[in-house]
Length: 347
Image 1 (tube, rainbow, N blue to C red):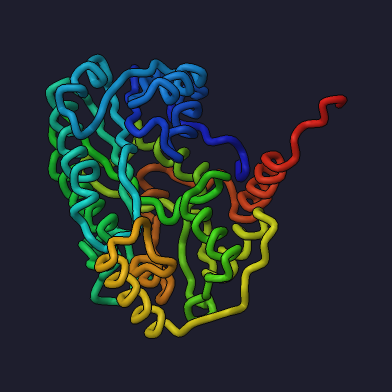
Image 2 (cartoon, helix red, strand yellow):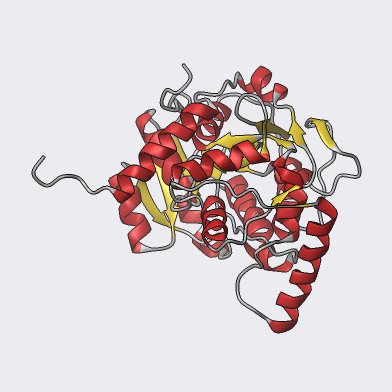
């Protein structure tokens, strides 16, 4: 039912979740526990381990860049859900390789040795960025790219390819590719937009008129749960909310939850692309920390339509969104109000 709590698949034995302390992992672990799975949560800190334990999971230390730390984490698990990854807007791919590519290969090797039956990887629809044709009507038949505008997307493509290539008779490998994952109060992408609005730096590209697809976190968790039982090994699956939306309407909804109004300022796509390239060069020359206010990745995501079909997931995974975009915005508004309005001690 739309708007209901995500309902991951039936229990199948012990499930290992990497990246358990990340934005997605923190929601995925308790959802899997609630569905009756025996969940082992791979963490790197005591605080993250305590959070996992409080959610009903078995915390275990592991670092995807340290192969020696992974065998114990994987031992006895029938399913691995690999959600660990490094995010960022830099166009350089090198910073993302140790975690996103080498780390994924490390997990694949240990999972195969540990007789894991199913390996589910959280990829990214952004791996289509850089396509030589407009991204409209795209699906899994389209080749993934390694775009120069995003080291993150390029690294996700390499990892995606490695996961699907590792599929075999002993271990089935599946990739779930969401769009912009949204719907949480701690979403780092939304936080950067909120910061830009408050600093008066946000400009809509082409007025925000281009249409895009996105993925509410509840819909993503639901899809991951389905993939435990469904989906052909060696395949990738796009998963999105129902329908598409314009960049303008999508951002307006996210900002509404933060009590902000979307600015009217706009910049043409070609001008935004030129500005992003100039800022990227300036940031690298001066070695400034963080990302520029306008990045090449953000420009490429917003200066053209980004429309991909998730028909394969709906057919083979039996995926249907569990929450609508409107419901997701309302839930986010409620969550944000709860964070700024402490409970009445006399209530």
